[in-house]
Length: 186
Image (cartoon, rainbow, N blue to C red):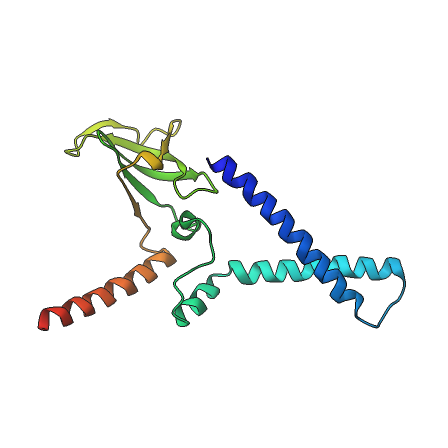
């Protein structure tokens, strides 16, 4: 499934790049200053790379989310929500519940291009529904497990207390407390 989505994304990206590149070349050709054909083409390529780099840095910057929040837009621009919830600076613990077992461990890797990715846990344990530990690999540094989140009943993400994402969650919790206390007073 993710491979099909990935190839469709590549096709869309290539087509978008060609269209944007064509428009960019037409706009650059309207500039009345010219040195020579070769120098002009090199300048177009270099300026396109610079504009693309700057645009990419702006779009992927965490500050853009703050601007979107200020504008009351709750969208980060990411297609897959896993890109929004994962913290790349601090380790994260994942707890995945299936029908018969619960897996809890540290997130090692995850599959991109999917809202229901396969994830890789390290330093994990397997529990039954009553939270009895069946297998404990938390101190085994030679073992990982790959889990399919599309078959999970529930997936919990536990962040480090130092995570930037916790600040956003803390703000939401404070807002919820305020709303809850107002509703209780009525």
